[in-house]
Image (cartoon, rainbow over all chains, first blue to last red):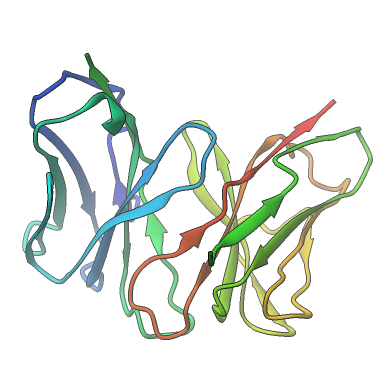
Length: 114
Length: 113
């Protein structure tokens, strides 16, 4: 079983719809959870981050972590064509540890249709 | 503005040549990383460095080499021993005490011709 699983898509939704992106993971030591957005031929940019379980909201974006199910989600409300990108989930076990590495999902390609 | 600069944006290499990809950051970050990104493969860690003059192999280090002589710079050399070097290469950095995430450069697309 891979440490982090993410459906590669592509996921196509109409403009204005609510988008749900998800990742599952197997390592119960993960505590720090991140979502990156990557536009074509660009580097990923950090979109949201959360610690442990719970929800975090930032504008149209909501990140949700369910540690009991080892499942994280990113919701995008009122989706826009400019949200079309690849979204990568990422997580780490001990953020303060110098040797700790971040594990990335493979990314989900999202297309918002005008 | 602080950030990470990768150069060149596009690079072409002939079979049997070594090439060096540049990565410079002015964020005063301690740790720096090199990833390779292929379609359907996600990000794969090549090398990382937590401090100057020290670096560790990642998951796919074979055929690559790095140096960290300055805090700001972490160049990656793709050697002729790398059998399939065509890929998108990403450099990233992280502040030593940060719990979250990396700052990524804009990437270098390497193509073998």
